[in-house]
Image 1 (cartoon, helix red, strand yellow):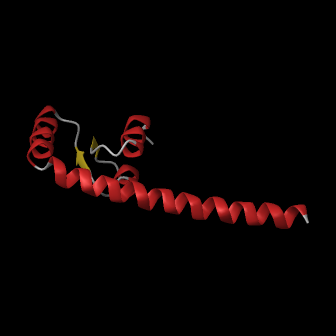
Image 2: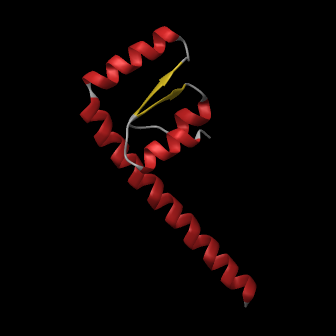
Length: 86
């Protein structure tokens, strides 16, 4: 996991990151995935510049999805811990 991309998600900022399966899966919205070549990066920056507000809205939605998923998982963990404690 890339810390910079995770921080961008937390601060609701669109992301340009590597085209790796785990990154594509986790950063599924508001993100441009590139092959790490200079040409790909230039193309992604131009795409982000032209469609910034669309990517911004997408990443805001992704952040909410990720937070809801985390909260659900955390609640389930607390339930399991409470059962073990009993």
